[in-house]
Length: 58
Image (cartoon, rainbow, N blue to C red; front, side, top):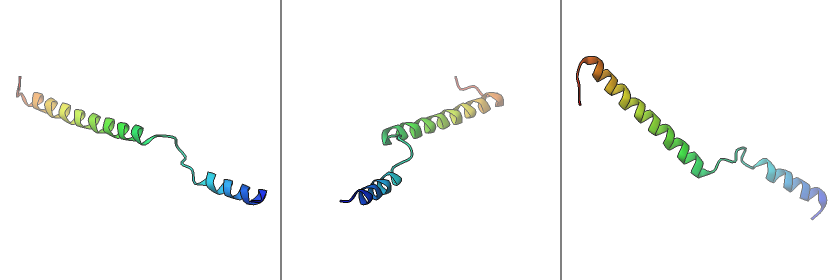
């Protein structure tokens, strides 16, 4: 393989690499973390609205 062809193949390969080095496991952990935060915020808002309405659950 000639040097120019090798260089073109190397450049083509490097163009298709991912831009970020975030692993799939890290992405899943991040998404789960966001979901848990949203659920906790929803539950807290629900209990806050109940406490403002004068109802006590405990």
